[in-house]
Image (cartoon, rainbow, N blue to C red; front, side, top):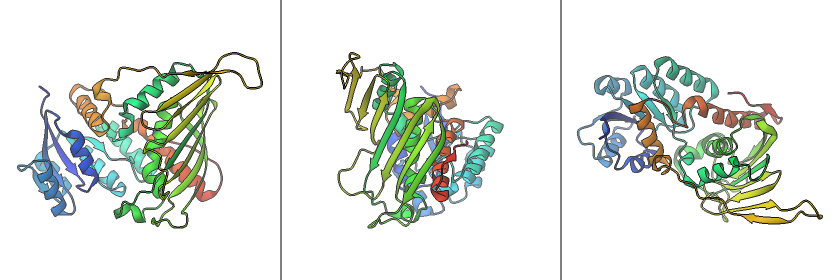
Length: 343
């Protein structure tokens, strides 16, 4: 049986329900504390987790001192990620935090440094990586069937009526959602962003105060150009939450609808105005259960690393490179010029 780990959940808003569903059925996890500035929300969260004996509080430091948890789940709003994470690390807890890693790059760097200094694992809930379809596509690209990758395109168009803090969030698409897609681009291509040119705007009819649409062009390492087009106020013909993708190589292309539909073609022959093409099926791959399941898979993997040592794919020292893409895109849009990407 898995060794028992005590956990304190900080931030008991709606996003924490996704964590609760993901953690359902995990052995060896005791929810020992719930912290929120709204005590009513903390009590409701404790009840939802069936944690009647847990400490409920609006004081994080006091709760950590009393409970002495092994891990902290940080489900707070982005503005609070920095302070909550540093407090948890200072109390000796490992931290799994909601995305984005931090509200800005300076805070992100301090958080990564604090995790290294305390010797604690600090990771981000980039749950899209824990998806069997993206892992299947990554394996296909790594096989070299398409030749050298040259171009990656992703489209995200969804009309999302959240209500709450996102309605007034600056750069709501780039700061809150694009992090998933940017991280996926890094993951799929095994490259890093070097520069970006971005334009963001808020279309007529938008229900957001901040810019809810953006187009960005990234120069990635390996001579790959990656483009992102997205809108969070686009009604009709929605893409999947994982985007629509087209990836081009020197010998062929693959498309992915973000769900389970792939289509790939490669050249067969070297003559003709358009070279002859052949459909190629993406091979099935065996994905370990702990690497699937979105939130559940990532939480399970994180707890494994806490118990056994080691790390996870979404460790903050890696994820900061995805966050750097977000803030470079925001900076480029503000300055109306290309900028370099620096983690």
